[in-house]
Length: 94
Image (tube, rainbow, N blue to C red; front, top):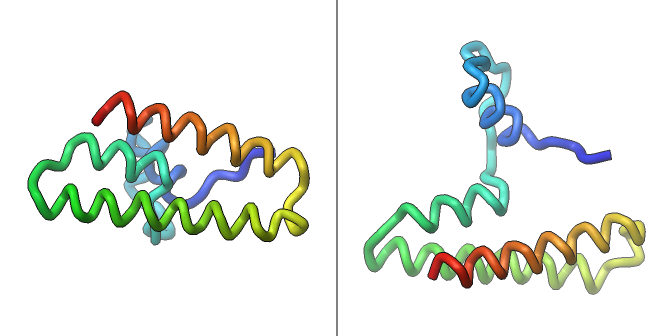
């Protein structure tokens, strides 16, 4: 079962005209949200920040792979597929 984060709910609610009285503000962006943001932002600082975020997500994923005993096979497969898709998306937008 796919669990949505607070930021997913905030995005969904705004897209559907709901969420004016959301209980919690999101604490983080999703990885997909950061990739979307990177396609919009321009400038030297934005490029540096984008590269730093990509490196951070890679480090997080490397950590997950190294500790895969804690994840189920299904979750690991889903993570690897998403990583591949995100990499393809980045290559198309750069």
